[in-house]
Image (cartoon, rainbow, N blue to C red; front, side, top):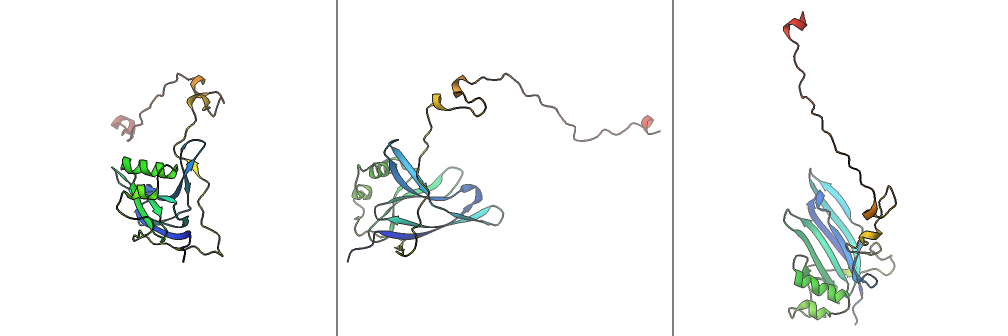
Length: 198
């Protein structure tokens, strides 16, 4: 029996509100020759004064790469790349901080590497399993698709950027030579002298 190709996964993380967790399908944009992310809708629920819980349900096909950010600290983001395997599991293939592993993910998405290249001999694509198990996506329900993908950190060249005010290229926009002045405000009102009271 052949395993189904589309699986539905549940994502839940507890983090600080400012962390902005996300789940995104990573694809290759052939025009810009760069990675593109399609973000899934995520529900953020405030918990306590600074905390939050992020929850998301998403569908992914066998062979898809899913990028997940669970939170962050002052020094690091908790962001990883997962591969959907035929048995319906998400397998962590790279942590975003590990440059060599992340480059393998880029090569895989661009079609220049195989799933076994991501495994580096530690597991087999056909039989791999993890604690993040998906279930077969229902055929009678619409798929939980991400928003249309957009290139990762893709900016136009400087000459083509325009300012909002003048509509001219940013490099030739006029610059003003105004300086800011600061006024000190007294925090207390001086008390009237004895002569002024009478």
